[in-house]
Image 1 (cartoon, rainbow, N blue to C red):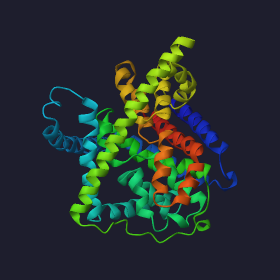
Image 2: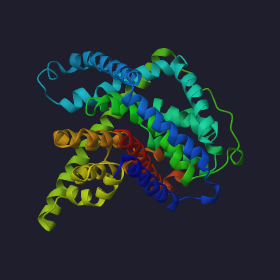
Image 3: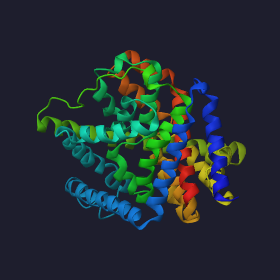
Image 4: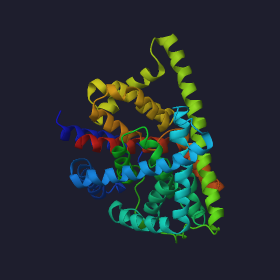
Length: 394
């Protein structure tokens, strides 16, 4: 099947799945969806096929590589030569740098550089997605600040938002990733696909939300946004962000330990009962979706298994699985899968997002908890859409 027809089929399937859970199909505005699809295709072609685009991605990747080296200086001081000896690779090379990146984000936040970036990009996004500035600002701030810290920026207005707007805000937080862990992703996936996924997910999120949760901006009054800036001294802020980065690293470490152990247990149980591992079974279930987004049929079973692993555990567990089979996959399959994996679309994120909101507003946290399945469902469709766009260009 020609890539363009395959891409059209993928769009039809993804949009149909989104429409199944739409709150109001009559309010879907297809002109905004079409515009954002065109923008996604243009960005993907530019970044993957033009010399300027490839140079831009390489510059970003090189920048993160340098940051990871700086982070390594702090890690080596604490853990000695464990890094040089190849010991505890995931903890030292993947998780510990999160602390350093978190500190940098705190500095940019303290000097009001991040709020300025959020407003510039958010305002631009709101011009093309047909939604309000709050939704667009929230998508950008989720990317820059992270799931947990993001909603603190909106604490003065969060309790006043409608359930429909709260769904949109929670969905954007789940469909993007925090900039503090992007460097960690780049140690496990090809950096250019990580960068591309960050950009595509911003648009894919609003495309899927335009179908699942359509409403007009005037139906949801635009609140006055605060300046997303906490009143702290520089060193108070720095300490808070360093500790926040440490908490994120430890949470990810705990989830890796728990989920990998549980998946090993499930694999053993399924193998003894059915002769197939749990991941093999999930691979068959996700096989059609893998093929739909452009994965060649001979790779679709393995890719489907990793896609399912991400959904039931988290993206880090899935990325570690990718490293085991990367040499067996076609470059096209690896690129599409890499973009799919770069998001927080998994069941564990429900508790993280709802807990972060509940810390600011108990009532709204309960509202978001009730959206649980629909949030994961929508965020998974966002990942599928971004991956399908890449499949159309590769």
